[in-house]
Length: 452
Image 1 (cartoon, rainbow, N blue to C red):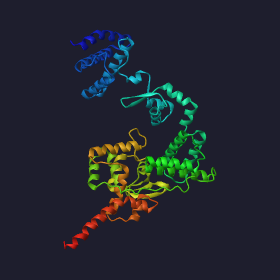
Image 2 (tube, rainbow, N blue to C red):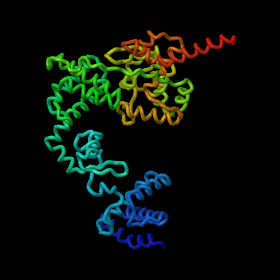
Image 3 (cartoon, rainbow, N blue to C red):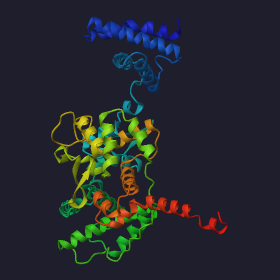
Image 4 (tube, one colour):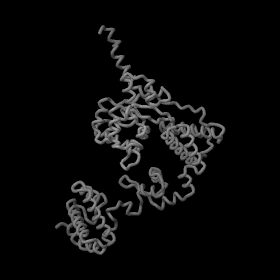
């Protein structure tokens, strides 16, 4: 018998006595001892010390049990191993429990748990850990936070002001700005993006020791230049958010001048986005394994809807006889879009008798979220072996397919819900470039010189 088994043979009866004293039934004691014995044999095979095992080794054993036997068996085995090591720690045989990450064993909290306890955003807490504002450690790619350090940070006056991004006056201003923008018909997604950009602006002002409310032209220019140096699109979006905020403040008499007036926002001329080919769309459809996936692909291809418009679809808005749907788009503009027979039938199968409410429902019965949608498309892309699968590429593909089939750009503008036809022309840029190339090749201007 190997050393590991010898060690287990010595400890087994003591562990059994601990279980009996703890009130475990005879069958539970037998099951726990059997699972712990198998674990000891595994340690011997893997040449891992029973009392010197690491967290990663324990997790590997549980994963192997899950794949070898079943999930329920792995759960029982994990409980037996955890019970054994907790008894070993209490008995003084080992110092740390290897079933816990070393950070947790030292009393640190996972960021998800700490953020939920304090009503914080997890990414905000991670930023605090990265910049050293709160004590913590990173272990195996995961952050763990010291609870006392986090509490001290939140209780501090300076830290409290930072967490509130500018205090009550700034928060009140943002709330009023949000209500104003939504009342003007701006899309919730645009308003959310603007609020995020304004929050980043408030953080920068605090770091620079500048006032957030009542900023002058020079301060706006400095921030705009800083954001442009990071990313052209980040700079533009930040300027648009600040311009909208100061427009709101002027409309409500909170300031006389607009410090963003005259700041030029030069847009980079982007190359037309490449749409999906018909073959790629067919591969995605063939890779769909659930009614949800099939309905999503067909609806995206048939309608050219934006992501937010698709997620906001309601059963009551579908005209089943005509195979169309009333889409609630940006700027509170509505438009009627055809779904076609294939997409309508796929949606009907997915709904499975539901007659009202949101069309797309997530795995827990709530509205399908953006992250769940993107994850669904990512899995589809992997199965179909198609790259760059995201909602907006379907919109570009719809525009190009519509024009390729003989549609005109004015009709396309209506179907896509654009207020400006220049935006529609951008979406159709790839089709226009391909059509121009094909026309040039058919002419063969240089070939005519040689009589070809």
